[in-house]
Length: 402
Ligand SMILES: *Cc1c(COP(=O)(O)O)cnc(C)c1O
Image 1 (tube, rainbow, N blue to C red):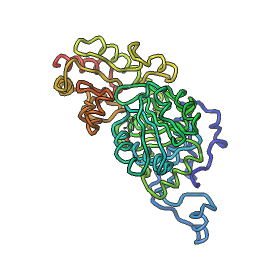
Image 2 (spheres, protein in one colour):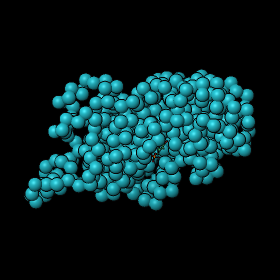
Image 3 (cartoon, rainbow, N blue to C red):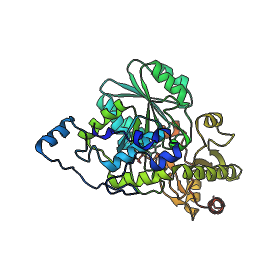
Image 4 (tube, rainbow, N blue to C red):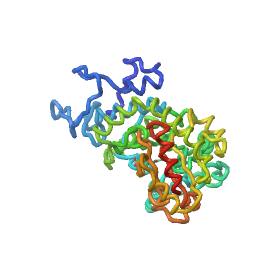
């Protein structure tokens, strides 16, 4: 495939640390010597002759053909993210959901089975539940906290285990190494949605996973501007997905790729500050009388606090809280905030607050929501980079109104 030229040997990137890869990885200057990565806004590419065009299309020679499946700006993002995740290759997609759909539809076939964490992002659950069965793919659901409960569900038909850790919105963790061992014992592969942690906090491939899925929309962008996604894995997998992308078309735009490239440059610093702010707010909220429970992997009260220390560099920037009351109480708190933004996005420099049961997880059935533990009093807070006291004061005055 044309998007696989290696840039490592020339630049010395083989020995670079993550902080350097995030800023300089995957990029070689053009003949103009530009310092910042260019946006290659072109749908197609020109050849010197009919023979050259034919050779490019057949794969005999490498190089870009059409931006539905390769674009130089998107490739910089792909190389950079692959390097940060420690994967061989990466493919960008139009959204996080497009990345997941590309992985599933590009690799699975009728009769295959997958096992997935019950408590995942709402659209992921809807895709798995409402669409995969139409194509003859069976999905089994299980609890990410309990790897033993997955054992009877994994058979010779199982091609993929799919986990999200920590989960949205309850921050439940799955033990990546244990799930990788289970998958591999049955000839299946493990895919991990690394959206909440990003490679700055968690490296699923180093823990044994085979595939990482990203919503670049969140922390990779980091400022709530663009929708995008990516899959990282072996060169063989990404070649398969590139060929699916060529036919199906859910590709990343070069402009969005450029925003994500720039986002990656500050990812590590941003994640540290998101986590520092979230950790302080989690302690504050846990001791507040209007809050019944706080879900945050950095709290001792979190059931997977030990695993979080082992598996993640830091506990993350997202927490959820159960207000002492029902939906009306949760909505009162949300309606009273002045600084925090009422929006479903997360991973933004701005703190965002949302009521999962009626927004991000509103399309799930009430029964599924209840099984997943997403109650009417639950509020998700994606802690931003504003001054900690300003965020805390905003929540404090809002909590007075619950
Ligand atoms: C947002 C999100 C997705 C989907 O990503 P989009 O870019 O919105 O399509 C997938 N997984 C998790 C955990 C998310 O938060």
